[in-house]
Image 1 (cartoon, helix red, strand yellow):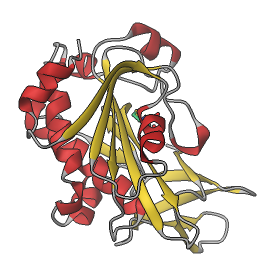
Image 2 (tube, rainbow, N blue to C red):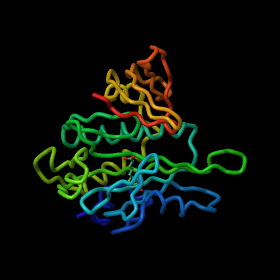
Image 3 (cartoon, rainbow, N blue to C red):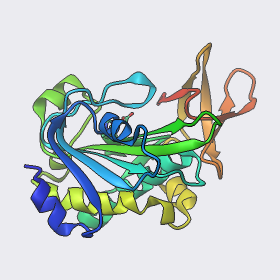
Image 4 (cartoon, helix red, strand yellow):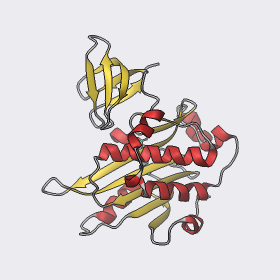
Length: 252
Ligand code: BTN
């Protein structure tokens, strides 16, 4: 079971954390906490379960007990929100590789996959002031840890660490390790090359789903700004795809 005191034991003593047994969404809690504050201090919000876990593009994120749901509230950084999401994805991969030797992949832009199934997701949200400057941002991360037959039956694309490793891991140790890595994402070294190495979307056929149209394409690569270059199948045109505009679905 996810326990605040166990997680806190492993965290730097100056790291501010707010823990919930259950809340609606740690991203929502972080944004509410930040509202109206002049100075944002990095603060981590962690929940053992969420009633309204949110994913990208308005999707929900299943958040029963047995997973880790955390959001880091940060003051603005000179880093694009899409890059923050990608850095968050790299940080999660590095943790899972170091702790469990898992072979982890990233489905562009924010989904963490193992053995063809989704294990974790990242959602970055920011708020802008009246001058269009970022006031703060929140990077949220959800990871399925313990076996959850409701989740994996209802969402066959989902998996858990326990399913992948066939053993129960220490959820508090994992939460603390993830917390430290997420808190450090602004100093990750050469994250785009680490991201590219793990991006399972590259080379695959994809369906690019935009606001007004969708089309089949082949994914060519991840650019330095983390956008995706795809070759549209109908006319061979090379197109840059940015998150927020589109969803990219693996087609084979
Ligand atoms: C996705 O799969 O599209 C992203 C999922 C992000 C889920 C995490 S769980 C902690 C934080 N709180 C939320 O409501 N969402 C993020």
